[in-house]
Length: 290
Image 1 (cartoon, rainbow, N blue to C red):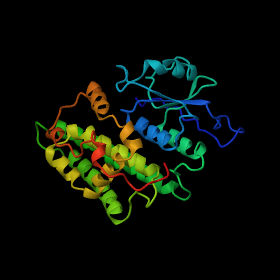
Image 2 (cartoon, rainbow, N blue to C red):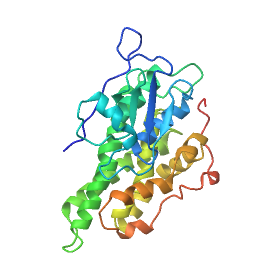
Image 3 (cartoon, rainbow, N blue to C red):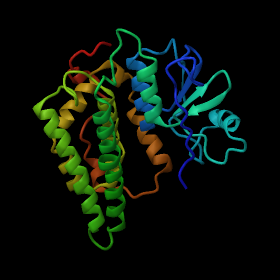
Image 4 (tube, rainbow, N blue to C red):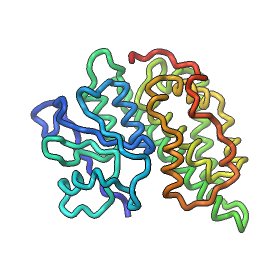
């Protein structure tokens, strides 16, 4: 059953029910969760700590996939709320209720309605459609395809390779090929000279591709994934940025994965593409107004 979503939005002014009043909202994030990490990067890059307070949650949620710290907030929002109290959450401090637990909506509203002058414009005018398309590419053609390839590979271990796994891997490699071509021919960011929300989405997707999904892929698949030099050089450059390095918790991501994953480890687990724990080795990307 899909997790229940709360998807209220922040509006531009006081004529909207949820408007961007400083200190009205609080974020609850677990940095081991990919959606939470994207929101946390947005929050850090826009320097919103004095406008939207942040509470960090443990890496590993409870057995039901949720956090006891958020149970009251969820139950105030929906009477007898039946599902797990998951993160990320943007909560309304005035009512104690959930505004949204949809990562993309939260990150969008922070970038659009809380950004002030001198902070990076993560959603520049005219870029919305391409940012949305690249986000779908990350979610569907990279992250979901990697999951499907891993599951199919495990199911086929006894009977040989499964066609579904090959199709999923082909989808993943095609998506990485598109990103490779874009970065090799332009850059240093996905949309040119400036960091945008598309870069945050892609970077977090690459982190989890290397630290989570490769555990269930064979070594040959991981080597094919790694054979995109511009993609992984880009990931290394962003790891050299303080905001990215400070918020990344590779050990927590691994711990969260192994706490709830029941899949079998494959040979790709031993083929790490990047050492995510050593940002000091990498050259930061071009300045972007931090």
